[in-house]
Structures are given as C-alpha cells and as structure tokens.
Image 1: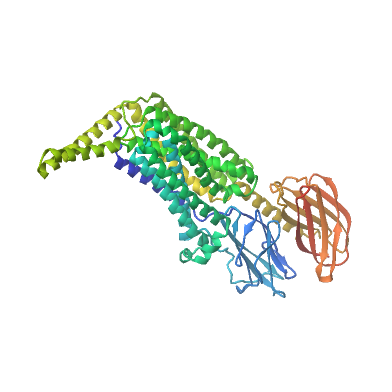
Image 2: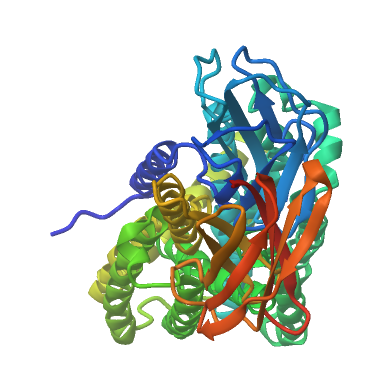
Length: 637
C-alpha cells in the first residue's frame, strides 16, 4: 500500500521539484542572442587595401544602442571610433572611424539590446593592408551572464511561477470551488503568488540596467541605469506590471474578504463581476510579457501578441488551477467536492486545447522550418518542452479517470469549516468561564475543545482518504505538479534562447558571406558582394548578391541575385544599382538591371570609368511602399 503523503512530505517534494528547476536554470548559462548579426562592413576576417571610414553591422532585427554599443579597437587596444552608433538604414548600424588608420588588425566589439528585450554581444576582427599582432582579444562584452545573469533568470522564473499560481489559484476558486474562498491554504497560495510576482518584478527592474550593460553586481542600485531602463520598452512593461499588481491586490482582498463572508446564494451576485475583473487584470499582466518579449518583434507581431496573452492565460488556468487542486487535496481541512474537481477537469481540458493551438502557432513563428527542431538550440529545447507537455497530458488523463469515479464521501459544509474549528474552541472557553469561577476549569474546557476539533479533523481526513478514487487522484495530481515545475523551468530557459528562425537566418547569411569572400578572392577577377537587407515590411528580409565580371575598368557583366534568408529565390518587384567613387567625386552611376527570372537580374556593358574603391549601393523594393538601400565598398579595376 502506498503511504499517505503528509503536508511535511508534500513540502519536501515541492522543495525537491524547485531544486530541479533551479538546476535547470543554473545550467542555462547566459542568455543567447535574440537579434543575430547577419553581416558587417568590413566583413569578419577580411583584409582591405584602404582604411574604411566607418564600420557597419547589420542585425536580424532592430536593436537598442548606446555610446558603448559598438567599439572599434586598434592593435594596441585604443578606440578608433569617433561617435555613438547611428541607424543608417533598416537594421544596419554604423560608427565613423578616425581618418588615416594605420595598417594592422582591428577588433570590432559590439553589445546591443534586441527588440525582444534580451542583450546581445559579440566581436570579430578585420585588417587594413595586412594582418598584424593585436593585444585585444576578439571576445564580445559579456552580457546576460555571471551573478547578475543568474539572478535575472531566477527573477524571470519566479515571475512566471507567481503569475501562474496567483491567476490560476484565483480562477480555481471563482470558477470551480467558490466555497474554497474560505480555505486558508488556498488563500495563502494565491497571496504567495502575488507576493512572488511583485517581488520578482521589482528585482527584474533593479537588475535590468546591469543585466543589459555592465553585468556588475555593484550597478544594480545605480539610479542612472535605472532611469535609462525606465525609458525602454522593457522598463515600461515592468512598471505597468507593478501598477496592475496593485489592482490585483484589491481583487484578492475582495475575493477572500467580502466575497468569502457572503452566503452561497449571495456569492452569485459577485461572481460575475469578479470573473470579468479578474480576466481583465490577468490579461493585462500577461500583456506585459507579450509587449516586451518574443511576441513583440519578428513575424506577425499584431497576431503574435494576442496569441501570447491567450497562451499565458491558458497555462495559468491549467497549471495554477492544478496547484490549487493539489493544495485543496492535501492541505485543506475542508474536503473538496467531487463536482468542483470535475469542473476543474473541464477547465483544464479547455486550457490544454488553447495551449496546444497557440503553442503550434508560436512554434511555427519561432522556427519556420522542420529542420530547426534539430538544428537549433531553440528547437531542441522546444522538443523537450513538447515531451514534458505530452507527459503532463498523459498524467492528466489518468487524473480525469479518477475524477470520473470520484464521490463525495464526506458531507462538507465547506467554506467556513476552518473558521468553525476556531470558533468552537473560543466558545468552549467562554462556556467554561461562565459555568465556573476557577481559571483551571476554563483552561480544561478550552483544551477539551481543541482536542475535539483535532479529533473531528482526523475523522474527516480518515473518511476522505478512505475513498480509493480520491487517494488515486491525489497521487496523480501530485505527479502532474512535479512535471509542471520542471516544464516551467524549461519554458523560462526557452524564452531566453535565440529563436530557431533567427539562428538559421544568421547561419545562412554567414555561409553566403563566406562563399562570397571565396569568390571575390579567386583568381578569375570576378567580384561578388553579398549584403543582407530588411525593408521593414512583413516579408522584407533577404540577402542580395552582386556579381561583377571581370570587375575592371571598362565594360562589365553584372548579375544580381536576391534570396530569402533560407537561400530560396526571392521574387521582389524591383532592384536598382548605383556605383560611386567618393575619392574622385564620381557618381552615383545608376544601373537598372533586367529581370531574368525569379530572384535574378542581369545587365551587360556596365561601364566602370576608372579603378578605385567604389561604393556599390543596391536598392531593393519588396512592396509598393517597402524598400531599402544597402551598400558595400569594393576595389574595382
């Protein structure tokens, strides 16, 4: 026979599950990049004949920068950039350089904040004239790691857990077990969720400045950094969350105060209002994540943000309600009715359907291809999450079987039971005091009242546990809760990992750039320039390649290829080319190539009047209103 799980053992199991979750979070390491570097000018590892006037980086999405976001260091480690990075076009950012730079190897170090609020960093080198020794290590500034990164990850986990427990617990009381508003363990559960979410939000607000910049513990309380955070999208989302938590506190006070004190018939008047108000506040809290993270950037943000809100609410109703049911089954003196468990089973089933439907959309949006499931870290983590969800649904199906067999073995006058125990003890004291004149008899009466209350509680528990179906339900719900804790940890790590679609786009751009470099270095004399672009529209990302043969003075044959980030031909309506030789104030010399086939344009007899460092500018139009111009310098002739 399986031994009964006492509240003490239950707490030990919960601590064990939290320890497992903490281990997952601790092993996650620094947050991966959500905005990927798609290209640079000069390119990584390239050797240029002439010192460039600027260094430009092209990311997969818009990023936030400051004065130290893009640094260029000479071989001795001295900065040679002269101004703050500026957004020159689309997702391309550049810093001007000092003139007359000496030959040698230069290091480009960058640290930015992606549009979905996560810090990104990296570094690479290029050389002028010929490579040289350098005292600079080509390592980007570390962001999202160390003690601050661990604390930030822990804060994110606690904020998700607090939201789920608070929202799901309150929904369980209103929608499934209204008499549970008077059960102390359920009250403590919902209040602890509110406290966890509030404390985690304040912690994230304090950590945010250091997390996205220096990564130093000493900068956590830097008011200057805090002021900068408040001006960002993430800072505004955290402040909004705090304001909504104030409204949530009022909601909880009414739920466990005025609502609990009313009789069952009178509660119906308040139930509808509390349900509407709770949904509004909960949706607002969920939106504070959707508006500042993955859903707010990338593909179809207008659809992704509402879907993300629905996903979070469904998860809270399912897993938070599951936690409330676990508390009701193990810690409550008031037995929960079979009808309430069945109502939650229906709510959980609908929540699972919503989680699966929204999860499928989110997976397609973040991955983009089947290969991303196995070829990217995001996809691999997502497979783990899907496996955990499948396991959770499997255990839930067992719980549903126990629920179908459940009967009310203990007639409960629920909702006030725990209060009645207290009042019984108090009444015993008063009765004894009125009937005797000695303090000893009064104490004796009070002791007997407490013993009677304890015996009543033990008798109720014995009757409750005598039902094998209820006992089986308790075990299956406990197993569900354990899997849910690990699932939440994996989800938290997943939100800090670079989406598979972005990672694959970056790999495609890097491979194309590498192939172009090989082509340009070949002895044929042909020149290939590859430039990623983003017109800003819903389908505006791609890569354009310009082939010039023989890349010399006089007539040249030019081919232009436009592809999507995954390498497929991109059928855009228009492409234009312009050549400019700034040193001689020649140009721009426009060229309008002819459309050959999907993603391919060509022009013959392109005249280059003289040798020099030519700027090749390509204008790509992807719709009637969306277009962008990208450029690169190349030695022609």
